[in-house]
Image 1 (cartoon, helix red, strand yellow):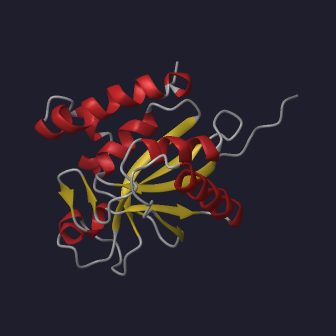
Image 2 (cartoon, one colour):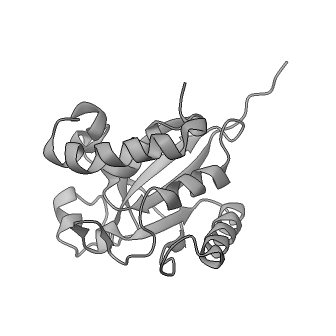
Length: 182
């Protein structure tokens, strides 16, 4: 009898959490992708507080995944290639510390893999500038308000979704065809 594989957790901040969530919801082996906040000093922050840039939080997506179907290293590859990890506090037109690039690790093993992948990408010249992605230990993840969850899926015609997320998803699907849910 096959033994059940325990889900693992990954948490990534790569700009607007709607974008990060949309990408990872489409990945085979990802069981859930939840938009939220991490890294700040305010308990149970609201979207308005995070946007005010005073809480220290980053918009993130917390991902539950089956490591038998998708590796943490593959998730990192997708993460690095679906946002610009070389800009501080910014992704496209989204500006502010809440949009910075960050990996919140859930174990020493994740930290080691994240550092290895980041170092290898920097050394390879994959990007025109050095990677500024922060690698931090997870502390407390706060789930974002309900209206932020599955935002792209529920609002594909909304302006930001149509102009920013839809093109990102098309590019992602072409680059990672082998990683898409069937």
